Image (cartoon, rainbow, N blue to C red; front, side, top):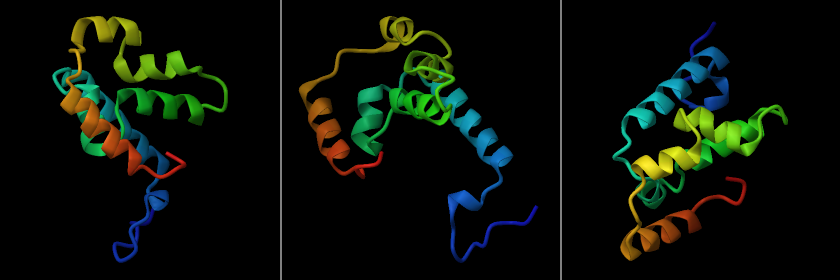
Amino acid sequence: MTAPDIDTPNIDSVDDAIAAAAFRRLVRHLQHRTDAQNVDLMGLAGFCRNCLGDWVSAASGGTMDQAAGRAAVYGMAYADWKAAHQAPATSEQLERMAQSVARNPASA
């Protein structure tokens, strides 16, 4: 395997096994950091655990529905995670989220 060209970084040049390991580490980190609220992730970066789960579902080529993709990211059913860890969003959080999501590319 060759290293990606650091002068022209491109995520598509990263080996799939390496990318998968990094993705799994991100998911495990988010599973551990239940204090990081989805609305705050959306407000900062325009994506959250639900987005990751939906992307897993989309990447599965139809083998995983949205609920299964989200469960893979949450480590449990989304409704169970939400009941145990999700706090009500404030109006400020919702406004930051709306502004952040508006900056996302149409394909996101």
